[in-house]
Length: 143
Ligand SMILES: [Zn+2]
Image (tube, rainbow, N blue to C red; front, side, top):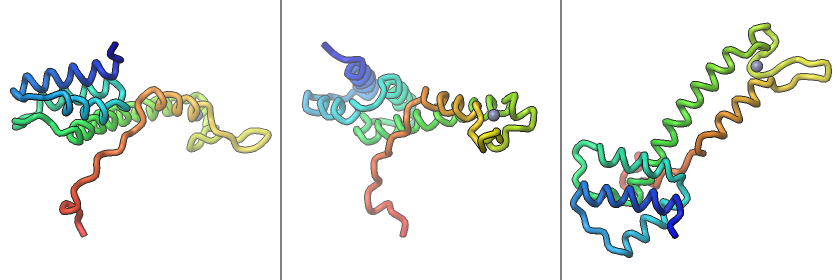
């Protein structure tokens, strides 16, 4: 029984194989399953869709290229959510009253984080945590 993660990887790979007229044997399929298995299925699917739409792409992505696109999807989702958090904080009633300064509020028992800060953290937790991009080859390092 395939998990949601396995299904997302297999479906994405199937589409990529068809689009790029590639052959994928079982060992290679296992490599993709192994390296993409810790990434959320929706992210894996969105990254596969991007690879399908990439102008100029002629070959199947390497596992590292697929991970890199996943990282891009997550970064964009986090940036979009960060904008929503910013908009939410701008409407903070405590801030509008002038009492919420940089997410902090003065209380009788000392300075505390404002409620909008906690809500903002909750909103950011709804999106996937950023993932590390695969390392670039040593030759691409600029000294
Ligand atoms: Zn606030």
